[in-house]
Length: 87
Length: 331
Image (cartoon, rainbow over all chains, first blue to last red; front, side, top):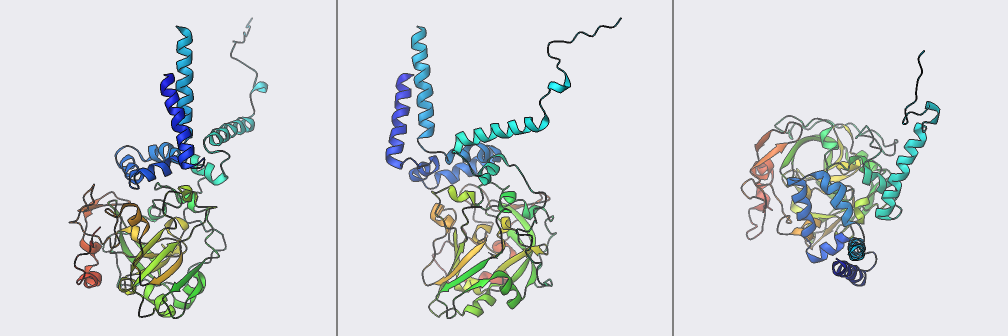
């Protein structure tokens, strides 16, 4: 768990270093593939739920790219530390 | 003797939290949630996040002083050939990425004032200028045309647009002989267009056509819908409509029109040129890479009807494309 957390934290640092503090999740996805986001949007809206895109995925694309790996890293790290202390 | 014993969960009415305080608390919690997501969102962003404060009238004028349309008799040459879409649907079911990426952006879009509004026409023209939208309507005169609208996504509407033929504006600015294309640029209003925060998109939204397409009698500058001023969610106050092309080609809320000898690269062409090309003429026999274009769903009734080549306007426009071998005309 702590290793996964450390990897996530490293990803957060890399995201800041590579895309800057203002780089968003959407910008990162767009840099990977310009059509990725629009295909994802169309797929979700047509086959799953328009609300899923509008209310969850789309706001997520506007968050800073470092935020999701940072949060995941902290959670994994804390869970890892907690489980080690219980042993 | 009746003794009322109060249960643990019962409290007197006087101790109940006042409704206003409760509502404020809910508002506060939503504000905190929004703040943690997006660090101090603006009112427009919070409204966008929570879909709050929807206005009841999708035809609302912003500002309220937007004038009525000048008289605009219906031109019988352009009839839809099928029932009009119910009046509320075309103004509440819209694609307009500057305001958001779902179909329900109308209440957000209505917050954008549509007056004063000017359109700059420049590039390869003899008489460039910046035109006020109301002055243009008064100068050229407007009419009503019923056009079929076919979206590349597979839905369709039948709408009475008010406006004037694009060629009449071209007559005013007089294109130079070297002008081959028309570049159509949508306005950017960051204070009201929360979609512009999607910084990875190639803003401003550009569309384009050839000078021959622009001069075709069907190319129509739209300033009204169902007899009322065109609301922002439909591209108000000033948009273009090419009814024989998929809807994304019809640029909305135009701020600038440039005549050029360079073929403009459109917004969607930049994003996914293999799916949304420059020409994008309607053809039921050429499927989108991920869905068929053989039929279309009519908004309002959900009836599915066959799609026609050039959206049924072949008699007006097929001649524009007879000498264009090697061009991908249908997507």
